[in-house]
Amino acid sequence: MSSSVTILGAGLAGSEAALHLAARGIRVRLVEMRPAVPTPVHASGDCAELVCSNSLKSTKPDSAAGMLKRELEALGSFVFAAARRHAVPAGGALAVDRAALSGAVTALVEEHPLIELVRAEARSVREAAAGADALVIATGPLTSDALAADLARIAGADHLAFYDAAAPIVMADSLDGEKLFRQSRYEDASAGAGDYLNAPFTREEYDAFVEALVGAERVIQRDFETHDLFQACQPIEEIARKGHDAPRFGTLKPVGLTDPRTGRRPWAALQLRAEDAHGMSYNLVGFQTNLTFPEQRRVFRMIPGLENAEFARYGVMHRNTFLDAPRLLDADLRLRTPQAEALGAPVFVAGQLAGTEGYCEAIRSGLHAAISASAALAGVSAPPLPRATAFGALMAYATDPATVDYQPMHVNFGIMEPLERPVRNKRERYAAYAERGGEALEAYVEGLAEAGLLPRDARRGGADGR
Image 1 (cartoon, rainbow, N blue to C red):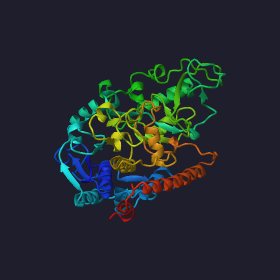
Image 2: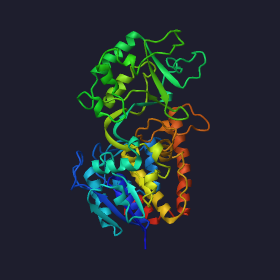
Image 3: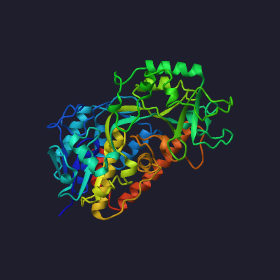
Image 4: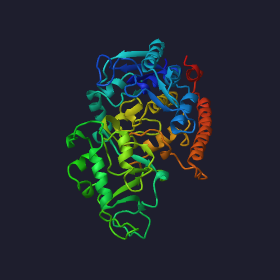
């Protein structure tokens, strides 16, 4: 008798996982609550419906988004192939006719003899896992209240967030080292071994920054209250709105810092913490924000040393259910808690619920969960995901226990391992990342084929979508 997998959620990740598992001869029960149970943002009950932008980002080969697309194509992604078939003009980006895309994916799912599409709300992880050989949870950021509550019991309430409160991340090579200084609080300024970069404000710079911050355009045009947030700080602009000096006595407090240029404590200071072990990108500590992306770019570039900052990720502040991946998931996207292990069937998590951000990232995570589940069911070991690939770098970051204050992330060069030989020119450096990633991808695909985890059916899906 063939194996069977239950998948919760028919979004981008769930649909991709279902199609890839079925392509491997595995029976799939795909459970989707829409349209019987609607969400605030979906317009239909179709699979793989895009609810925000219709853009899947850059197709440039030497961009992180372009590298990810190359991986999807090489691994035979069904959803990505459908997106390519239903593309609309968008310059150097891949944009799609969203209705055509979701319709095409829905047809692929409904017509596959090994996939049963069930229109019902899953309310219990244990019930969903019953009778299945593996379970994939891909219910997304709008996971129903009932399932989220049950998942909190499985994962631990402290490791499931219901609100996405992320600070911006900037690329290290876009910062002005002449204005920033490295120092931890109360550390001797001459030691030069601090864990933080510090952006010092003069009084005039601070006054101008706070004025711009308070007047900037927000995504949600209302004040946030503390009870709106789950394990998160107030947006920096809300703190400033409570009083002109409030940030200076909180997030921007200069206490314990000495600007080596002046030998004195600055009027205010922003601390930047390395986002990765190699110091390729930095997090603006305490700068959770509800500002629009253009306003973040305008206002945060007023911070001394960040005048030319390149953003690897903008700050976000919105409803979002996601797991604390570094504490709960392994590199195979398998949920590792005693409660999950006691279910008797391996449990995998994919899509935004797993803490990835972005359409293509969701598709790729669904594909990865399918590979991991099929490997577990076959009793074989999948080749390790190369860190040199875009998705491999994302998974290394997202499942690293050393990653603190985890927030959803998309692929970007700021989380990739540095090149063995540093390349100063940015364009040449990104091209080198892409070349290195392409070589690692080729070896990975060969390893999957040798392990019997890349069936011919899936390769056809990536090539022509049939």
